[in-house]
Length: 156
Image 1 (cartoon, rainbow, N blue to C red):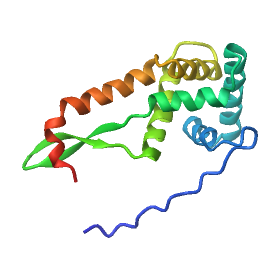
Image 2 (image 1 turned 135 degrees about the vertical axis):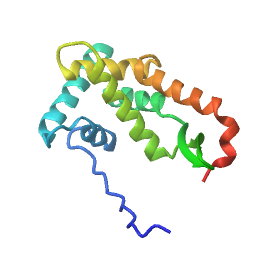
Image 3 (image 1 turned 120 degrees about the vertical axis):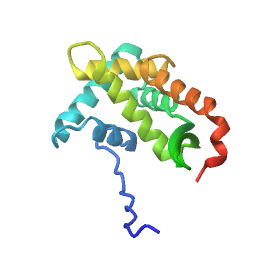
Image 4 (image 1 turned 90 degrees about the vertical axis):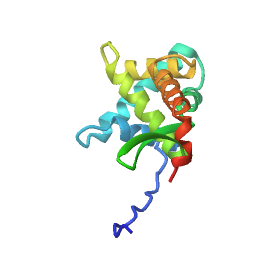
């Protein structure tokens, strides 16, 4: 049995302007070299851009984008008898949200364009409309889990 300490779950505080925990989680994903102010500026600019482009509440669009990119199942490598199987596992809500935010920021960074705020805004808008790379990644993850459904009995 493992003797490692179990990591304590940190309390996520809501951000100052929108009073949303989701925006604070997104800030942590964009954060580089401890520059939290810059990360928040990028997010707030992108939310303003979303509002100007869609004329809707940017927080609702962000929540819809995260909901559309949150995976329900994922595959985890499990080593059994000398061979490694991709075992489909259900994703908990917190991990699903984290994966969705991670994919949105990753594909926003990979986009072509000038500023990160515009790239992030476009990725969020695409995800809320159920197209874009983050949603494609979720579909790919679901397909992988579906293909390896035969190994579902190897769950921990």
